[in-house]
Length: 450
Image (cartoon, rainbow, N blue to C red; front, side, top):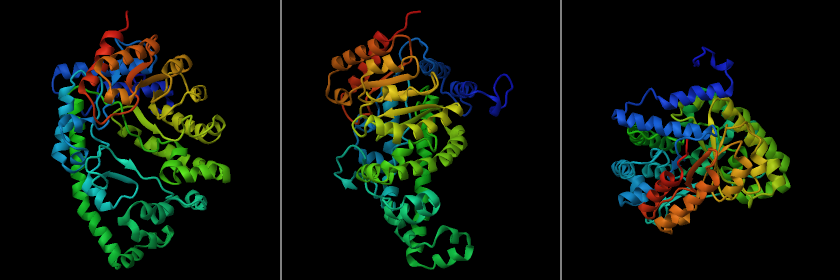
């Protein structure tokens, strides 16, 4: 890639690289807009977000509606139906788009997984309606566990591929239980080894199941992609790009491997081992970021943060275990011209001064329950901020209450630019007029006078 000056990618500053990505975002090559009006609105919306990211004042405050899995509720179907009926999933996602035509951004159903495939894999890390939860449930539930034992850090650090095959997979997916019996990965480089392994009936069943699942999964992914493309073609940019390797290293271990109980014990019993393991994953993750950066249709990359909030760890622990390695990931993304958007779940009030160490206008901090007035005060000249009408208010409040909350947020956070109005988190049910009230507040109170 080269920019308008003819500079090669490796010669560009991060700002120049980001500008190239912003231009690609503004004029996507693979999108055929439904109409000139759709293209005009698309560019208007993207421009609104770009100005907010750059800490400039757009025409008005941009809005990210807290959509979550709300399209199912809006379409009158259950979340289980969303996961098991591909046609209903498509209908629900497109219906929401048609029902809320004034949105600034909307993303496809990329977080909706195919229930049949998940069941066949015998996933142990999640529950969903009809699979560990009542059929009336409206969301996934993550099942924490010590999927990595306390004494296995060294195995993970030194033989990550082997560990993934022979321990992580069998512990998190019942279908892959036979992989516990695999020989060490270094022995799997011999073709005859696999011939012998596949003489085992358990292994035969595993691979036969995967072969049967592959077309179903491919069809699901095809429809997800088609819906996402139709959303773009209708004039709605995506603000949730996905890039591999963008997770906070601490969360990799605290969420997916050791679990909350395990990681808390490790903080006190083997703190240096956690740090060694986090540092070990960084080079590979940075390489993944570089390789996958161009696949994202949006330069803005959504990064949920689960274990860094005020309640989970002390300031000193955040400085030691969370921020140093996560900052390296953020900086790698920034250097690639991407715009990290960490979703700071919970409260980050005590973290605000700890997260100022990034280049000006390089990050969007999306806050859940953080004091937004204080966030604006501390981060206002450094990072764009987004947030944070409470989910409880969006679900149970009245449109008037939602609108007033948004008015106050705009009053506190919008002056000078660099603010995106949104909910504290996505919702899965509630009065649709509350969504409309958020948009109305942005139009009525969020206009910048020129």
